[in-house]
Length: 343
Image (cartoon, rainbow, N blue to C red):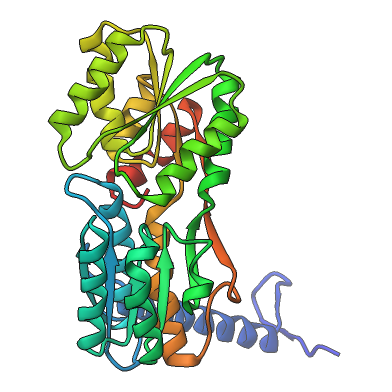
């Protein structure tokens, strides 16, 4: 039962005292919540690009060893993802790379000798790197693989793998080539002996109903690569689509198509800001994206979780970050992220 008080001279208006008090309390609570929210946002925010840990866990040292060749922008995006997770998790990230398998193994061994808290490794050449990885595991260092090595990581004692199924990615590209009406495709492998690249071309061959030719170039020598591609297009004039396996090769191939006087269209695996621009304006037919930023981020995050609270991502199974087929219709939605280096 409410108790009401009539105020004299109010022309019959009434006010409920308890209700008025409750209304005042609610306003005070709302103000308090707003203040707390503002303080929380201020604590979580900082200057643009500021790098500061958001956790109070012990400082960790994690090595990331990839097979990046000079000029391969894919790995820049992987590294940025790793750097972002490291900044959040109070981690010192030691990044190194080498496309040569034996030298990559030496980099893994150096990380073991430094007694790092975890290692992220790209198993592009698992036969060469496997021995050093096993030493790391035997030393009790958590190891996570990224990008390549889905079929090998478990046998090496690696706790998690982040990437795309390369055969499936190739199959998806082959189906897309069928959709766009391709008849004869040139698949360009830019790093000989890299299992993931071979699997991509094999995947294309398995689902594409036309003819596929495969050539090898060296992404570390773009001038020579461009010359090889131009020559191939000049001598094999019925090639109507080129399937690049990396964005820098795709962008160079666009020039080779012009130089050769070819009418071939170009598609590619993996993204870059330039590739997205080319997709937007129709110079690239489509892109097969595997979200490299996510590979770098999740691999560092996984080791931090494992070291600080005993959890791992994926339950010992591969965690897929792709493939995603992007066409011109999708380009605008990811263009800003690509420009910022996160796609």
